[in-house]
Length: 232
Image (cartoon, rainbow, N blue to C red; front, side, top):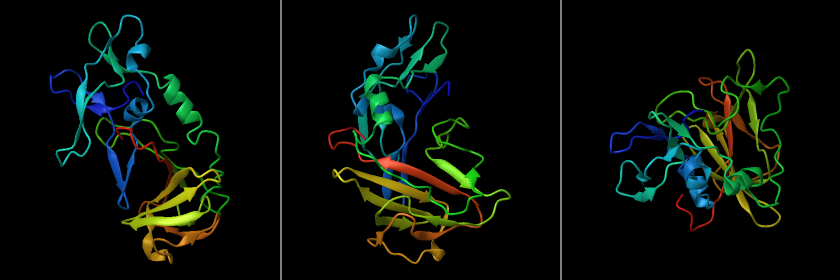
């Protein structure tokens, strides 16, 4: 993860690696740790190693097909003498605190989203790594599959309700005892096998449906709602 987010600065300087919004069943879920670091108040200037220079601020295009931009964000990246661009560590105090405890003391209390004991981490394993140099570079979730790969049943990881279903995605909404909201995302599903509808209550361990017979894995992720005044 030498470079963490995709961004092509207009001044022609080297590419910075960012990640855009993802549209999952009509829900916009951001998997950009750069913007999240800004949202929780980290200052990239405090993280620059000796001898490094912060990459200049850039306008971040929130919706590439439209006019909405977040102006003058500082990429969490720096330039070393000689010009090579490196990502700053995600160890900013606020970002690290958020990643360690995103619900501020509340527990998600998640279960595994499948029943089959033979299911293991898939080829991409856990998320938050770069596997190519374009906008699809980051894998913001965890893949699970059987070996040899086969269709399997998927169940809810926590009590909640179905927030959205579209394409091959299901998004569930959950609320902790203290009122904090989070979502679980189930991608690469065969929605023909799903007997539920948007708005239906779902219990932990309840069957959602099966993965599709093309991807032959479950892409599972968790999203936390950020505060309303954040840029994401």
